[in-house]
Amino acid sequence: MTDAAELRRRAQELLAAHPPATTDRTDFLRARFDAGLAWVHYPEGLGGLGAPRTLQAVVDAELEAAQAPDNDPRRIGIGLGMAAPTILGFGTEDQKRRFLRPLWTGEEVWCQLFSEPGAGSDLAALGTRAVREGDTWVVNGQKVWTSSAHVARWAILIARTDPDVPKHRGITYFVCDMTDPGVEVRPLRQITGEAEFNEVFLTDVRIPDSRRLGDVGDGWKVAQTTLMNERVSIGGMRIPREGGMIGPVSRTWRERPELRTHDLHQRLLKLWVEAEVARVTGERLRQQLVAGQPGPEGSGMKLGFARLNQEISGLEVELLGEEGLLYDDWTMRRPELVDFTGRDAGYRYLRSKGNSIEGGTSEVLLNIVAERVLGLPSEPRTDKDVAWKDLAR
Image (cartoon, rainbow, N blue to C red; front, side, top):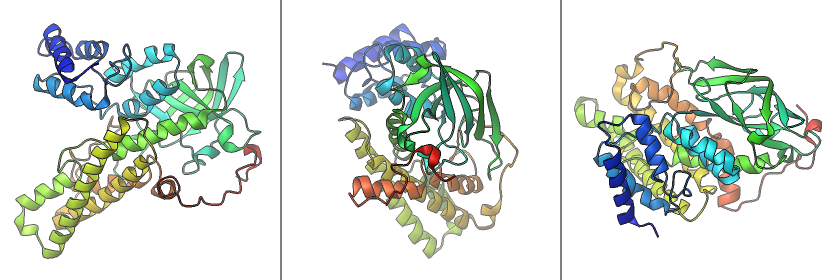
C-alpha cells in the first residue's frame, strides 16, 4: 500500500538521481513519469503507482519545494484533462504506452476535433464522415473552435461511421495525427485579436484502425468520458484563494481606493464570496473523483465558472472607469494558451465571453444539470429513433 511517507521517499529519490538544477527539463519530466510520480493514481508503468488520487498533492509539494520543473499544465491542458483519461479508459495497452508519456511530459500537444459548424450544441449531429477501407479509415469533414490545433501533434476526433442509425449510435472515436496529409488548420481570429481557436479541414485523411478508441459505433459513449473530464478540468481547476479572475479585481480594489464606490463594494463582496464557494466546491468535486469517474456535477461547476468570469470581468471594467476601456494589444497572434491573469482588464472582459460557449454551452449544461443532477424530466426529442441521414439539416 503506497502511503504519503512512501511517496515522499520516492520523490526524494527522484530528486537525488535527477537534481533539478543540473538536469534537462524534459529528462526530469520523463524520469518523474517513469518513477510513477506523474499522476500517482494511474497504473504502474503509465506514470502512476495505483495510489489514491489525493496523495498527488504530497508529491507535488515535495517537488515544488525543490524547485523542480512542472509540465506546464496550462499549455497541455487538453491532453491532460481530456485525452489522457479517455485513453486510459478506452485505449489498448499499446495506445496507453505510446501516448501517455509524451502527453504528460508535454513533448506532444493534443487538441480536440469535436465541434463542427453544424454540430456544436447538438454535437451528436456531427457530419464528418469516416469510411473504412480495410485496416484504414478515410476521414472527410470540417471541425471548428479547435484550441491549440496550430501547435498540436495529436487530436481526439469523433466522426460518423454509420449514417443509417440514429445520430448517437453511428459515431466512432479516433486519434488523429495532425501532421498527416489532408489535415489543414486555419486560424479563427477572435474578438480579443488573437487566434487561439482554429478551424480544421480534413480531406481524405487516412487513420489506421489501430488508432481507434473503443468499438466501432461506440464513439458517443467514449466521448462522454472526454466531455465530463473536460468540464471538470475547465470549471474545477485547483486554484488558491483569490486565484483566477477574482484576483486582479481584488488587488485593484485594495491598491486604488480612489476608484471605490458603495455599489461596487457590495458587488465585489458578493462575487468574492461566490468565487470562494466555487473554489471550495471544486475541491469537494475533486475529492469525489477519488471514488470514480467524473459525473454530471462537473457540468454545474463549468456553468458557474462561466457566469462568474463574465460578471467579475464586467465589474473590473466598471471599477477602472475610463482605464477599463483601453486595450493593450489587438495584434493578430496564435498563442499556445489562454492567459486570463497576465493581460489587462479589457482582454479578460472580452475573452470571458467565450466561457459560456467553449466546453459546452451554458444552455446545454443547464439541461444536463436539470436532467442528470436534479432528476427533472428530459426535453422531448423527436430525432431519437430517426436515422442520421434522414434528419433535417
